[in-house]
Amino acid sequence: MSDIIKILPSDVSNKIAAGEVVQRPSSVLKELIENSIDAKSTRIQIIIKDAGKNLIQVIDNGKGMSKNDMHLSFIKHATSKISKIEDIFSISSMGFRGEALAAISSVSMLEMESINDNQNGHFIEINGGELLREKDSNIQEGTSVKIKNIFYNVPARRNFLKSDFVELRHILDVFHRLAISHPEIEFSFINNEEEIFYLKEESLNKRIISIFGEKIRENLIPIHESTQIANISGFVLKPEFSKKSRSNQFIFVNNRFIKSQFINHSISASYDGLLKDGYYPGYFLFIEIDPTKIDVNVHPNKTEIKFDDDQNLYSIINSSVKHCLGIYQVSPVLDFDKDPSMDISYDQVKSQPTSPNIEINSDFNPFKVFNDEEVNKISDDHLTPINKLNLDNDSNQALKIFQILNKFIVSTNKSSLIIINQNLAHQRILYESFLKSIFENSVNSQKLVFPIELSLTKKQLLLYNKIIDEFKSIGFEIIVNNELMLVESIPFGIEKNNVEEVIENILNENFNTSNDFSASDFFAKRLSKITSIKSGQKLNSVEQEYIVNHLFSCKEPNLSPDNKQIFITLNKNDIENKFNG
Ligand code: ADP
Ligand code: MG
Image (cartoon, rainbow, N blue to C red; front, side):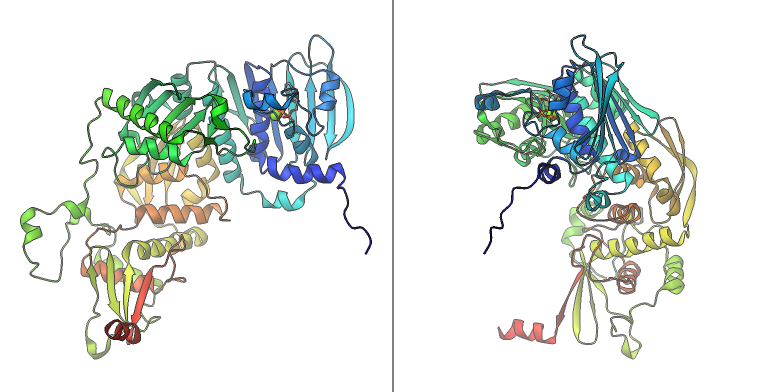
């Protein structure tokens, strides 16, 4: 057999390497800003068009490059940051593998201008890794790198890019992380011709406030701890400011953003007893640690990191967070939110229920908008209750449906027992109905007598603008004025006092990009999750029936929007086996 092994041409190998370094516009932005930071810039301007799909430009006032260095910068493993292997262990710059520009230029159209040491400025243009054109430039200081048409020559990857909303979300994440870890740098961020961030050189707490809005100011608790293993600084957020998502969690090691489950865990454990279930604390934690005590052999794009001494680090972080929460005398927030299932007096718990027909406290009725009349109306509208499962309703008896453990609804059909998870079932019902109104544009909303006023961060506002249509299509009527949002109408099915949470949750949500959903799908999923009845809520018989009927009229009654099993069935054999086995 003839030889079959070939060395790949460098443009092919660069494209393959690009797959590791450049996953999406936000990874390009990260590399470019990091290069500007490494070049000691004090001012960085970012210009984005179409969520970075058509333009990502970073302009800095750093030390710039000579004409020769500009040429070299596109060659793989060309770096000014290390020259011998030992350097890797003491590296403090952001990049050092000399891969980023080679990789980025191989999958995009790139233009770079730079000037250094009073030489003349120079301009080069590179398409797909090939030098296309170069000339003098009259750039006055630093470097400007323009990436146009990312992945223009790798259509499979270009098609893989998500909606502008999702890509912009990633870009803003990258921007936030770098802007927070470099408050000494002035940043401007222009998106589709509009300056959405102008951050002047400032202190860390001011930087956090500039990015996340005034509301965060009074919630910042400073943290400081010096130990032999590590120094901890930054801010943790008061428990009241915790969120249902992890969007306010930032950890930096040696000023580099990282993700770490065990550090998250250690901090969350410090908040023990202070947080409502399902809420996550927020923090901006900076850990300084001897670089030889961490594993630096990680991919530049990966944010995971390994510590030699993670057990001690865990305790140090845990106790320093506890300490600073203690200093600020944050006492446990016991009735953070009233849980209806806890709202039973001791006597009631002890006494036997006399009637199976449980009434629930109407203040906590999750179906407030679904009074009986409406329930019937909805069933008549477009649902054929029950028949899909052929539930047993012979001999004119009412369906035997009841709730157990405040969590499951039990029903039967001819031969089986069906146990339904009420929360997942309701999510499915709401999800399909939200999707339906989005697609059919059949708005179903209620006007509020007193509009609800919310103040938004710039990032939230930006994301809101991307999904205005979805908001409208499900029944929100919203006016935005500067950073104030005035909610005038809300969809049926959403409680007034949930509105802030619903909107914040949607605008803060981290997308799970492995799921290829559209904005509408995402929207319907989030809404159904937030507004669904939860485990622990008592349901009256109308509500129980509502769940059963509507669930089995859904297109996909088996699985929740997140693909969890909604109900189980026990048939005759299953039951008999329990007795015989
Ligand atoms: P790395 O950052 O790992 O060295 P890159 O491919 O990102 O590799 O960059 C290659 C080299 O190009 C850098 O080492 C640096 O010398 C130079 N360079 C890139 N961007 C800039 C910039 N904005 N200002 C000055 N020099 C830069
Ligand atoms: Mg770099």
